[in-house]
Image (cartoon, rainbow, N blue to C red; front, side):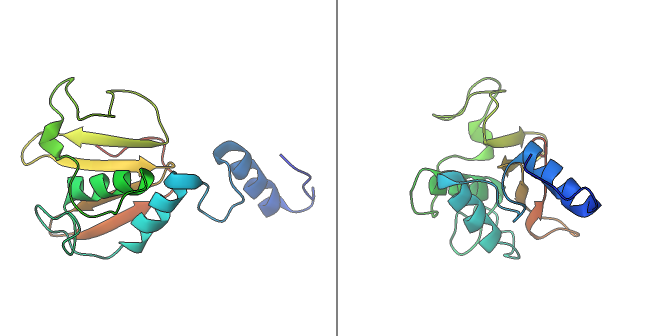
Amino acid sequence: MGPVDDGDPVALLKSLKNSIFGGDGSGTTATGGLGRALTWARSQAGKPYQWGGAGNPSFDCSGFMSSIQKVILGQVPRGRLWSTFSFQGSNAPAGWVRNLRSPFQIGITNDGVGHTAGTPAGVNVESRAGMAWNRSRFAEPAARAVP
């Protein structure tokens, strides 16, 4: 932690948060491809859920996570790299390892229709359908992917 005015509890808390999570308190602590992906993902907030969508014009859950991965890799965030059901047991698409901790983690459930959500740089992101939620969501900070 850097120098902090002992009389300013808010500055002390911000400094402590930044020392734990990194960054300068601006909300985007990631850099490089991960930072670009998080910025891009935030720009998609409010778009409707689209079953099977991969950026044409909107996304389903795995299409959104695939597009985030594509931005990290320096690719155009349109089109699908994989789907929720590409993950079966210990089998996963290339580049994904079960239970590996990384700056971009995803959570998968294959129960019912299945769902995929992720945490780039500790920020929960997902696109999901339903009566209450029909948009891309963000919540900060997160410890792991939302199942």
